[in-house]
Length: 187
Image (cartoon, rainbow, N blue to C red; front, side, top):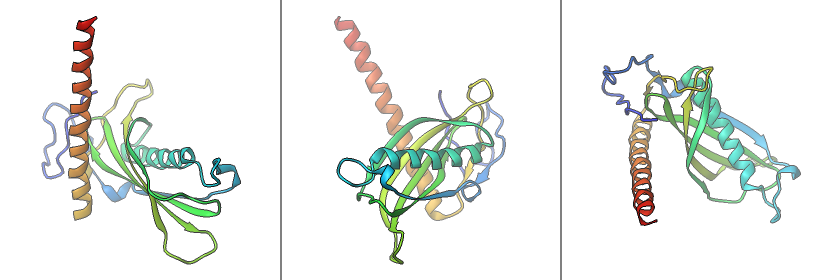
């Protein structure tokens, strides 16, 4: 699936595909919150990273579905950073938003915060992730998504950073394919 980057400053969008209209970043931004329990623990007594990853994917999926106006599937997790362990009893907040859109794909940025359920101290950032979702139709085929219209300077910066990540993803994929093709020639 090849995407044409959507430039929020270009109202015409790509010439070869009809744009279903843009949506501001705030239109699909969401937060999912949950208290971590004994069921979420790993062998070290902290919350299992896979539990956090599922929450991240759930929040990102909700944002992708809201932005695209229908089903969207996880295409890749570009990056997941675990910064601080999460403990049983922590109230975890997963904040997600669309950072960038192509024709049928969207990068969703996710920030994970945790705070003690019984304290009024500020939440601590415990993780960050970037996921790519593809909007699909009822047959599982890619479908067009609205361009994202960054609301703030921070949203515009996130859009530009997402374009850099996309460029790196595509370059990495191309280099690996070329390496494999050369390897196939070697036997």
